Picture 1 (cartoon, helix red, strand yellow):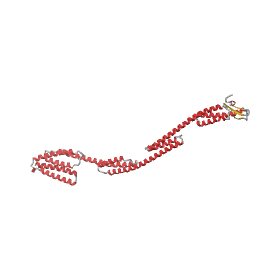
Picture 2 (cartoon, one colour):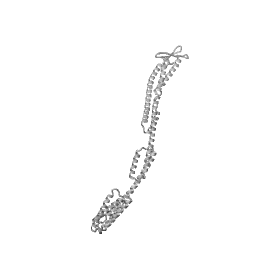
Picture 3 (tube, rainbow, N blue to C red):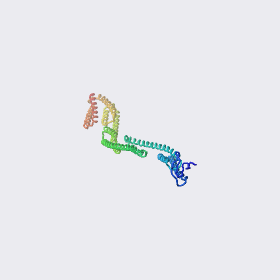
Length: 404
């Protein structure tokens, strides 16, 4: 008798009652009146086969991992709990043993699945919590407004991809993120409002600096104006920046005013340098001419020539700084040579017969008139030069008269 032979696991008695055989004894599962006992056992055996097929399916799906372990465990327990009252004929003890093994396997799988879900949930919570903490840090400290704002948007996009957080925890985390985002928006708004105010103040200040620079662009007070423009540049750099458009516009005006002044100053100084250089060259030529005078051959002629040179010398304008002292000393040396020659000539001539003495008195008178004209004109440079020339001529006259 084979294992699938229903007579091994059941029987039909004379009154048609069908029994199933188990380790615990026989149990009536129904009655059969429609045919032979063999047909009755076969009918209840097919019902058992249906149970076996259902168990086979559960076992296969659990083994492949296609089924949810928790749902499979529920089905296994349902089948296992129904075996004691199942109206079937078959190896119920063997089927119960299979279901018990499946129960253990399903419980293990369900426990592992639950642990995985808990781990996934914990990971999801941790990820969202990390995003929230980052958002809160941005809200409290970040000042890179564009970068921080973009990052908050990225956090939101990443937030939407995270699943598996329970509703309560997710709601609490979301409230924290939303609060951080709102706090950042308020702080950013306050910053830009303050920045706008600062830029308006900066614009006002720089407009004042531009106005002053433009008022100085036509000045001829070269040193004082140059110093003030340099101070204005320092004040410009120390002032906050205005808006980009205003800053550029005001800067162009500020630089244009400075360039206008310094260009004029450069042109003036260049012309002045050229004039001073020409004056220097003129005095150098006069000095060379004076140093070539032969005072011994004809002292009187030498004196006349020297006086002509002196007159031209005093008419030459200013010289470059530190260039005039040496030239004046050399000219005085020539003057001393002429004086010495004249002294020697005067000693050889009676004073009353000395025409040079009369000529020197005339030169003193001319020098006095030149000084008077310079004083009338109020030209300080000419006054100073005339005073020096008069003093020199008077000194020559006094020496000549004393020698006579």
